[in-house]
Image (cartoon, rainbow, N blue to C red; front, side, top):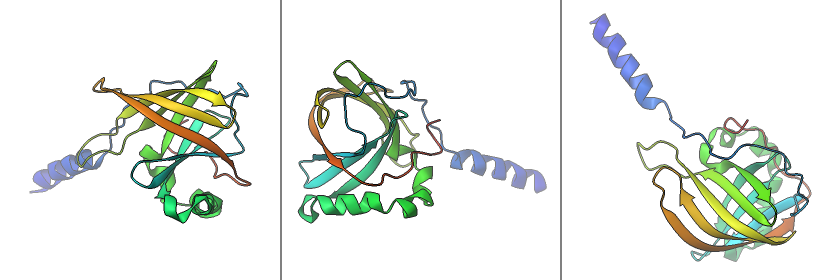
Length: 174
């Protein structure tokens, strides 16, 4: 009986563990000066939501979530300005809101985890695009690393200044 209980516990622990695919990009400081870093970037999505991201000098990216366009950019600001709540929250333990980015010449490359379906492991995808100016870039392609699937995109990200950004410390990108 004890043997079966032990084996069951081991299987349960293994089933609850989360496998994460290692990123393909290498974390490096952004010294390019090509884009603004004292705020966040947002894109309007076709589904009526904003997609917002924070890029940090250390090469880390934070997904800011999706808020309704009808609520305006002030709602996105408020989400980020709640940095003190974020700094102590469980969000630091969620892989799919974190990633790595790099800038090479006038191109930006962003690698993030996709939200897994039930029972799936965390897989990464890479967005690539070009920098228009320090306040705007356009993502033109997305490649899912595990499957190799490639998608054409046209996501225009615009900069918005923000007085305080959440800290980039997390459990996944080191």
